Length: 362
Image (cartoon, rainbow, N blue to C red):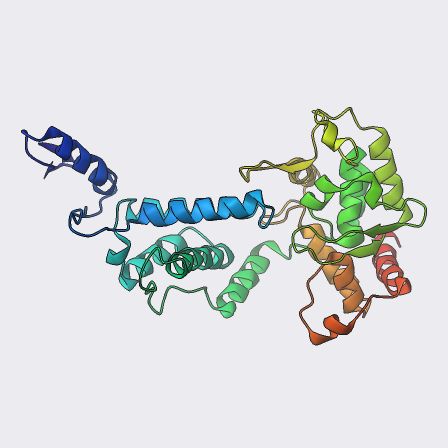
């Protein structure tokens, strides 16, 4: 039995054994349509194919996701990476047939589409998948990636950043731009902008913010950052607290009772940022913020709501108290000093917050 694929005839078996021919066709058709050389299944020994590795890996990571050890977004990243390598190599490719030259070609295909940061993250995830497969005895020998299948050098990332800045400028905002954004924004979006520049809040931080996380009287936020579980505490400006309170008072009734304590809800009665159990994200903060930047003609390539966090880090760093800045942003500190440090004086956090406040509102 045979069939023509991509203009070439391919033979799958004898007419007197159609079941075997159909089975072989199903094993090889994806590789053939992708332009890859199909493999002949080893009938004497068990052959681990690429689909086996990624499926077992994803199932294991799904267990960690369900147990709360990794986020749904983290699992989704692994899923998309798995889809990329399956598409490039073919799902039925035996893992033992993969050579360093194959990974060099894979890296080249990524580099054509992505910048240094995404390329580096993708390479790291692929290496993690195969290292996991070896450490769990799914494959018997470590994967040889070759000397070229690694993250781009830091110099390349810096060069790409400089080239982007030369064309579009830096991604942070100046005080005049932020003043215009705050003057034009209203409701929960205004509160999110203030949180972004007050302490480097991200869209996910805004979506998860609950009333009990905010001390409206004294102005403190005190909660570990969910992404890193690093303690985070900062002083909220009066303007920020006022905007949050106004957004809470204007909230609609949530569709899900579990969201009744959230500070911000959209007109559709959902969180302004949320993540499904499958890892897909809905970011109303980013969409509304980008739309406002376009309206005010201050939109740049790569400049998103997260650029407020860049701006805060830049301006707050000029307060000369980087430890307090890191504490407010929830940055992990791996130094030995962090092991011994048992806390931070509130006055330092207030000073950092008011340094940025003075820069913005003076």
